[in-house]
Image 1: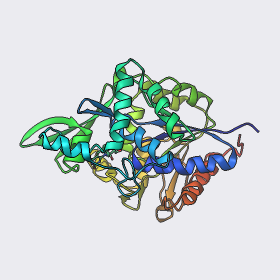
Image 2 (image 1 turned 180 degrees about the vertical axis):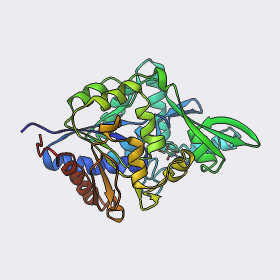
Image 3 (image 1 turned 45 degrees about the vertical axis):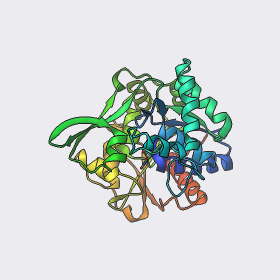
Image 4 (image 1 turned 180 degrees about the horizontal axis):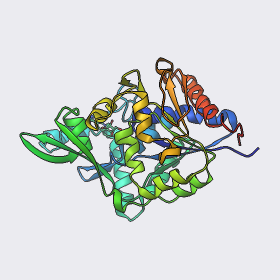
Length: 326
Ligand SMILES: O=c1nc2n(C[C@H](O)[C@H](O)[C@H](O)CO)c3cc(O)ccc3cc-2c(=O)[nH]1
């Protein structure tokens, strides 16, 4: 019996919370975890490169996140934000905390010096010791933009402007992953997938957290080609997202807000999709996905223990068919 290697595709705050459970279960069974993290939310503001999903994972696993707000640092102060506002500098709708800003300063300085984002992330993690390996999906520019109508004009705005400034509350037509066509997986990502015993899709937003990762074609191809189980955890319980904006995003795509519809979006491996298993909440026990075995368990990430149990259930489902666990 070797050391089990788990790869998790993740983004957003739900994804960070899920990883806390993955890490806990991995410690119990002696597994090694690599998180492949969405970078589509990344944005440059006030000259600083901000990576919300990488930071959510890093701060959450480092025990330094604000559990109330969901994003950013606990015990944050806002002097820089207030000072920027006093200068009348835009964007005033995006909050950069003082502690958080230090992270962006270090990151931007390293990027400017020529280090790739993956190396910068590893350097930042030396401080936070997340206990798992964190890889950005790509070191290349990949940004999620949203095609909307604003003041009678159709245009594409950055995901952060759509979500934070407008709360997603604009006529929304589609999501575009700028740069995805040319983006290559970050160093380590393809190797991690090739060495994985199982791949988990976190209960993150399928449209703006997981889809931008899968938009890196070599990464998606590697997942489609793998012979190990790929199990997703539903971000939808009943007809609502566990948190965040997945409902708005799915509606934009014309996809029903349900656990089954999200699974069909990822698709069954036997039908050119990704999934070999799909974990849903007990309330969605009736979910049927063509070609994908499902299992219903409590999916509320109410504690580290509850989340670790979900992860154990996901692994049980992953290895249910052949019964061979590494
Ligand atoms: O709702 C907000 N979310 C903010 N977020 C969260 C972020 O917009 C989203 O929750 C994630 O991109 C979704 O994954 C930030 C995240 C950061 O890493 C840094 C700064 C911010 C600032 C805001 C903000 O002002 N308002």
